[in-house]
Length: 312
Image 1 (cartoon, helix red, strand yellow):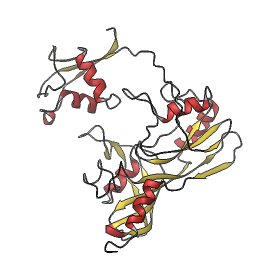
Image 2 (cartoon, one colour):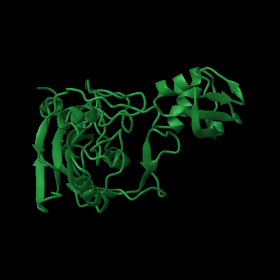
Image 3 (tube, one colour):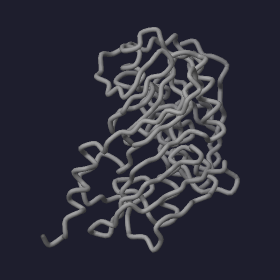
Image 4 (cartoon, helix red, strand yellow):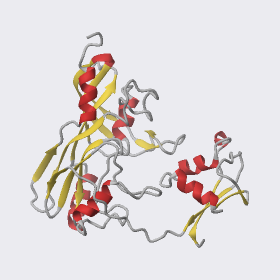
Protein backbone atom coordinates (compact mmCIF):
# COMPACT_ATOMS: atom_id res chain seq x y z
CA UNK A 1 0.00 0.00 0.00
CA UNK A 2 1.34 3.39 -0.93
CA UNK A 3 1.38 5.89 1.93
CA UNK A 4 1.33 9.63 1.96
CA UNK A 5 3.59 11.85 4.06
CA UNK A 6 1.35 11.90 7.12
CA UNK A 7 3.03 9.83 9.79
CA UNK A 8 2.19 10.50 13.41
CA UNK A 9 4.14 9.54 16.50
CA UNK A 10 1.98 9.39 19.60
CA UNK A 11 3.06 8.74 23.18
CA UNK A 12 0.02 8.17 25.40
CA UNK A 13 -0.39 9.77 28.82
CA UNK A 14 0.11 7.44 31.79
CA UNK A 15 -3.57 7.50 32.81
CA UNK A 16 -4.49 5.96 29.43
CA UNK A 17 -2.47 2.80 30.12
CA UNK A 18 -4.64 -0.27 29.63
CA UNK A 19 -6.76 1.28 26.87
CA UNK A 20 -7.20 -0.73 23.68
CA UNK A 21 -5.10 0.77 20.94
CA UNK A 22 -8.00 1.00 18.46
CA UNK A 23 -10.06 2.97 20.98
CA UNK A 24 -7.11 5.21 21.90
CA UNK A 25 -6.38 6.06 18.26
CA UNK A 26 -10.03 6.70 17.36
CA UNK A 27 -10.25 9.06 20.35
CA UNK A 28 -7.06 10.85 19.32
CA UNK A 29 -8.10 11.13 15.68
CA UNK A 30 -11.82 11.83 15.99
CA UNK A 31 -12.28 12.18 12.23
CA UNK A 32 -11.32 8.51 11.80
CA UNK A 33 -13.85 5.86 12.73
CA UNK A 34 -12.85 2.97 14.96
CA UNK A 35 -13.48 0.49 12.14
CA UNK A 36 -11.15 2.51 9.89
CA UNK A 37 -8.49 2.46 12.62
CA UNK A 38 -8.90 -1.31 12.94
CA UNK A 39 -8.35 -1.65 9.20
CA UNK A 40 -5.17 0.46 9.45
CA UNK A 41 -3.93 -1.86 12.18
CA UNK A 42 -4.78 -4.93 10.10
CA UNK A 43 -2.92 -3.44 7.11
CA UNK A 44 0.23 -2.84 9.17
CA UNK A 45 -0.07 0.94 9.28
CA UNK A 46 0.06 1.08 13.08
CA UNK A 47 3.21 0.15 14.97
CA UNK A 48 3.99 0.15 18.68
CA UNK A 49 7.67 0.45 19.51
CA UNK A 50 8.38 -0.47 15.86
CA UNK A 51 6.35 -3.68 16.06
CA UNK A 52 2.95 -4.49 14.60
CA UNK A 53 0.12 -5.18 17.04
CA UNK A 54 -3.50 -6.30 17.04
CA UNK A 55 -6.46 -3.97 17.59
CA UNK A 56 -6.94 -5.52 21.04
CA UNK A 57 -3.44 -4.49 22.18
CA UNK A 58 -3.59 -2.49 25.42
CA UNK A 59 -1.27 0.48 25.44
CA UNK A 60 1.36 0.98 28.12
CA UNK A 61 2.97 4.09 29.55
CA UNK A 62 5.92 5.08 27.37
CA UNK A 63 4.72 3.24 24.25
CA UNK A 64 5.73 4.91 21.01
CA UNK A 65 2.82 4.54 18.62
CA UNK A 66 3.33 5.36 14.96
CA UNK A 67 0.27 5.81 12.78
CA UNK A 68 0.52 6.09 9.01
CA UNK A 69 -2.53 7.43 7.21
CA UNK A 70 -2.74 5.79 3.77
CA UNK A 71 -2.83 8.03 0.77
CA UNK A 72 -6.41 9.10 0.30
CA UNK A 73 -8.19 7.50 -2.58
CA UNK A 74 -10.20 9.72 -4.88
CA UNK A 75 -13.53 9.44 -3.14
CA UNK A 76 -16.72 9.49 -5.08
CA UNK A 77 -19.66 10.43 -2.90
CA UNK A 78 -22.65 8.87 -4.58
CA UNK A 79 -25.97 10.69 -4.93
CA UNK A 80 -28.73 8.71 -3.23
CA UNK A 81 -32.48 8.97 -3.72
CA UNK A 82 -33.27 9.63 -0.06
CA UNK A 83 -36.48 11.60 0.66
CA UNK A 84 -35.87 15.16 1.87
CA UNK A 85 -38.20 17.40 3.85
CA UNK A 86 -37.57 20.65 1.95
CA UNK A 87 -38.90 23.74 3.69
CA UNK A 88 -37.67 26.27 1.11
CA UNK A 89 -35.59 26.28 -2.06
CA UNK A 90 -34.43 28.75 -4.70
CA UNK A 91 -31.35 29.17 -6.92
CA UNK A 92 -29.11 30.07 -3.96
CA UNK A 93 -30.15 28.05 -0.95
CA UNK A 94 -32.20 25.09 0.15
CA UNK A 95 -33.55 24.82 3.70
CA UNK A 96 -34.18 21.26 4.86
CA UNK A 97 -35.74 19.73 7.94
CA UNK A 98 -33.28 16.99 8.94
CA UNK A 99 -34.71 13.96 10.73
CA UNK A 100 -33.19 12.64 13.93
CA UNK A 101 -30.61 9.94 13.18
CA UNK A 102 -29.36 11.28 9.85
CA UNK A 103 -25.68 12.22 9.58
CA UNK A 104 -25.12 15.56 7.84
CA UNK A 105 -22.07 14.73 5.72
CA UNK A 106 -19.89 11.69 4.93
CA UNK A 107 -16.89 10.92 7.10
CA UNK A 108 -14.24 8.22 7.23
CA UNK A 109 -15.95 4.85 7.21
CA UNK A 110 -19.40 6.40 6.71
CA UNK A 111 -20.05 7.41 3.12
CA UNK A 112 -23.72 6.72 2.47
CA UNK A 113 -27.13 7.57 3.86
CA UNK A 114 -26.12 11.12 4.79
CA UNK A 115 -27.83 14.41 4.10
CA UNK A 116 -25.12 15.20 1.55
CA UNK A 117 -25.86 12.00 -0.38
CA UNK A 118 -29.51 13.00 -0.53
CA UNK A 119 -28.71 16.60 -1.53
CA UNK A 120 -26.41 15.48 -4.33
CA UNK A 121 -29.30 13.50 -5.81
CA UNK A 122 -31.78 16.34 -5.37
CA UNK A 123 -29.57 19.27 -6.43
CA UNK A 124 -27.40 17.45 -8.97
CA UNK A 125 -24.43 19.74 -9.64
CA UNK A 126 -25.91 22.76 -7.86
CA UNK A 127 -24.04 22.72 -4.56
CA UNK A 128 -21.25 25.01 -3.39
CA UNK A 129 -17.77 23.50 -3.42
CA UNK A 130 -16.06 25.63 -0.79
CA UNK A 131 -16.11 22.89 1.87
CA UNK A 132 -14.71 20.27 -0.49
CA UNK A 133 -15.89 16.98 -1.92
CA UNK A 134 -17.04 15.58 1.43
CA UNK A 135 -19.22 18.54 2.41
CA UNK A 136 -20.68 20.14 -0.72
CA UNK A 137 -23.11 22.90 0.18
CA UNK A 138 -22.65 22.46 3.91
CA UNK A 139 -22.16 25.74 5.76
CA UNK A 140 -23.24 24.55 9.23
CA UNK A 141 -24.17 21.29 10.94
CA UNK A 142 -26.34 19.80 13.63
CA UNK A 143 -25.66 16.55 15.46
CA UNK A 144 -26.83 13.26 14.00
CA UNK A 145 -29.40 12.82 16.78
CA UNK A 146 -30.60 16.44 16.66
CA UNK A 147 -33.51 17.09 14.31
CA UNK A 148 -34.44 20.31 12.57
CA UNK A 149 -33.50 23.06 10.16
CA UNK A 150 -30.33 23.43 8.11
CA UNK A 151 -29.55 25.83 5.27
CA UNK A 152 -27.50 24.43 2.38
CA UNK A 153 -25.79 26.62 -0.20
CA UNK A 154 -26.16 25.93 -3.91
CA UNK A 155 -23.30 28.13 -5.11
CA UNK A 156 -20.08 29.60 -3.75
CA UNK A 157 -21.38 33.18 -3.56
CA UNK A 158 -24.26 32.19 -1.28
CA UNK A 159 -21.88 30.02 0.76
CA UNK A 160 -19.55 32.96 1.40
CA UNK A 161 -22.46 35.23 2.31
CA UNK A 162 -23.91 32.74 4.79
CA UNK A 163 -20.50 31.85 6.23
CA UNK A 164 -19.90 35.54 6.95
CA UNK A 165 -23.20 35.72 8.84
CA UNK A 166 -22.32 32.65 10.89
CA UNK A 167 -18.91 34.13 11.71
CA UNK A 168 -20.43 37.32 13.17
CA UNK A 169 -23.23 35.37 14.93
CA UNK A 170 -26.07 37.15 13.12
CA UNK A 171 -27.92 33.95 12.20
CA UNK A 172 -31.09 33.20 14.18
CA UNK A 173 -30.94 29.66 15.57
CA UNK A 174 -33.53 28.63 18.12
CA UNK A 175 -33.87 25.11 19.51
CA UNK A 176 -36.49 23.33 21.59
CA UNK A 177 -35.23 20.89 24.21
CA UNK A 178 -36.37 18.81 27.15
CA UNK A 179 -33.96 18.93 30.08
CA UNK A 180 -33.72 17.37 33.49
CA UNK A 181 -35.06 19.17 36.58
CA UNK A 182 -37.11 22.29 37.08
CA UNK A 183 -35.73 25.86 37.12
CA UNK A 184 -35.84 28.59 39.76
CA UNK A 185 -35.63 31.25 37.02
CA UNK A 186 -37.64 31.80 33.85
CA UNK A 187 -34.64 32.56 31.64
CA UNK A 188 -30.88 32.84 31.66
CA UNK A 189 -27.63 32.86 29.71
CA UNK A 190 -24.68 30.50 29.81
CA UNK A 191 -21.52 32.29 28.73
CA UNK A 192 -18.77 29.69 29.07
CA UNK A 193 -15.93 28.80 26.65
CA UNK A 194 -15.94 25.35 25.08
CA UNK A 195 -13.04 23.19 23.94
CA UNK A 196 -12.48 19.54 23.19
CA UNK A 197 -12.25 17.51 26.37
CA UNK A 198 -8.74 16.61 27.46
CA UNK A 199 -10.08 13.38 28.99
CA UNK A 200 -12.27 12.18 26.13
CA UNK A 201 -11.54 13.46 22.64
CA UNK A 202 -15.06 12.67 21.46
CA UNK A 203 -16.57 15.07 23.98
CA UNK A 204 -16.53 18.82 24.45
CA UNK A 205 -16.16 20.54 27.81
CA UNK A 206 -16.18 23.91 29.53
CA UNK A 207 -12.59 25.12 29.33
CA UNK A 208 -11.21 28.62 30.01
CA UNK A 209 -8.79 28.12 27.12
CA UNK A 210 -11.61 27.28 24.70
CA UNK A 211 -13.58 29.43 22.28
CA UNK A 212 -16.26 31.73 23.63
CA UNK A 213 -19.70 30.13 23.62
CA UNK A 214 -23.00 31.80 24.56
CA UNK A 215 -26.40 30.14 24.91
CA UNK A 216 -29.59 31.98 25.92
CA UNK A 217 -32.38 29.82 27.33
CA UNK A 218 -35.94 30.35 28.52
CA UNK A 219 -38.40 28.07 30.27
CA UNK A 220 -41.42 27.17 28.17
CA UNK A 221 -43.15 24.72 30.48
CA UNK A 222 -42.37 22.66 33.60
CA UNK A 223 -43.16 19.00 32.92
CA UNK A 224 -43.98 15.97 35.03
CA UNK A 225 -41.25 13.69 36.43
CA UNK A 226 -39.07 16.75 37.09
CA UNK A 227 -38.35 17.62 33.44
CA UNK A 228 -38.64 21.03 31.73
CA UNK A 229 -39.38 22.13 28.17
CA UNK A 230 -37.08 25.00 27.17
CA UNK A 231 -36.11 27.16 24.21
CA UNK A 232 -32.39 27.70 23.61
CA UNK A 233 -31.03 30.38 21.30
CA UNK A 234 -27.47 30.16 20.04
CA UNK A 235 -25.40 33.33 20.00
CA UNK A 236 -22.36 31.29 18.98
CA UNK A 237 -22.26 27.84 17.39
CA UNK A 238 -19.72 25.50 18.97
CA UNK A 239 -19.81 21.72 18.71
CA UNK A 240 -22.39 20.26 21.13
CA UNK A 241 -22.87 23.77 22.57
CA UNK A 242 -26.41 23.45 23.96
CA UNK A 243 -25.74 19.97 25.29
CA UNK A 244 -22.55 21.04 27.08
CA UNK A 245 -23.95 24.31 28.40
CA UNK A 246 -27.16 22.85 29.79
CA UNK A 247 -25.25 20.00 31.42
CA UNK A 248 -22.88 22.54 32.97
CA UNK A 249 -25.78 24.19 34.86
CA UNK A 250 -27.13 20.80 36.01
CA UNK A 251 -29.89 20.59 33.37
CA UNK A 252 -28.62 17.98 30.86
CA UNK A 253 -30.82 17.10 27.92
CA UNK A 254 -33.16 14.14 28.20
CA UNK A 255 -31.75 11.27 26.14
CA UNK A 256 -28.19 12.64 26.07
CA UNK A 257 -26.08 9.77 27.41
CA UNK A 258 -22.85 11.62 26.62
CA UNK A 259 -23.36 14.68 28.82
CA UNK A 260 -26.26 13.44 30.95
CA UNK A 261 -27.33 10.27 32.77
CA UNK A 262 -26.34 7.02 31.07
CA UNK A 263 -29.74 5.48 31.74
CA UNK A 264 -32.75 7.11 30.11
CA UNK A 265 -36.31 6.51 31.39
CA UNK A 266 -37.61 6.43 27.80
CA UNK A 267 -36.72 4.54 24.64
CA UNK A 268 -34.89 7.35 22.82
CA UNK A 269 -32.32 7.41 20.03
CA UNK A 270 -30.51 10.48 21.31
CA UNK A 271 -31.07 13.82 22.95
CA UNK A 272 -34.40 15.66 22.90
CA UNK A 273 -33.21 18.62 20.83
CA UNK A 274 -34.89 20.12 17.78
CA UNK A 275 -33.63 23.04 15.67
CA UNK A 276 -37.02 24.66 15.17
CA UNK A 277 -36.21 28.17 13.94
CA UNK A 278 -33.61 29.41 11.46
CA UNK A 279 -33.27 32.94 10.12
CA UNK A 280 -30.69 34.73 7.95
CA UNK A 281 -30.17 37.49 5.40
CA UNK A 282 -30.82 36.02 1.98
CA UNK A 283 -27.57 36.16 -0.04
CA UNK A 284 -29.23 37.53 -3.20
CA UNK A 285 -32.18 39.61 -2.03
CA UNK A 286 -30.54 41.08 1.07
CA UNK A 287 -33.79 40.55 2.96
CA UNK A 288 -34.16 38.69 6.25
CA UNK A 289 -35.90 35.33 5.91
CA UNK A 290 -36.98 33.04 8.72
CA UNK A 291 -38.20 29.46 8.75
CA UNK A 292 -39.82 27.28 11.39
CA UNK A 293 -40.17 23.53 11.77
CA UNK A 294 -42.83 21.89 13.96
CA UNK A 295 -41.77 19.42 16.61
CA UNK A 296 -41.32 15.95 15.12
CA UNK A 297 -43.21 12.85 16.24
CA UNK A 298 -40.45 11.49 18.49
CA UNK A 299 -40.51 14.79 20.40
CA UNK A 300 -44.28 15.23 20.74
CA UNK A 301 -44.66 11.60 21.82
CA UNK A 302 -42.43 12.16 24.85
CA UNK A 303 -43.98 15.55 25.54
CA UNK A 304 -47.44 14.02 25.70
CA UNK A 305 -46.20 11.54 28.29
CA UNK A 306 -44.48 14.23 30.35
CA UNK A 307 -47.56 16.48 30.33
CA UNK A 308 -49.65 13.83 32.09
CA UNK A 309 -49.61 13.50 35.89
CA UNK A 310 -47.64 10.41 36.84
CA UNK A 311 -50.58 8.79 38.61
CA UNK A 312 -53.16 9.49 35.90
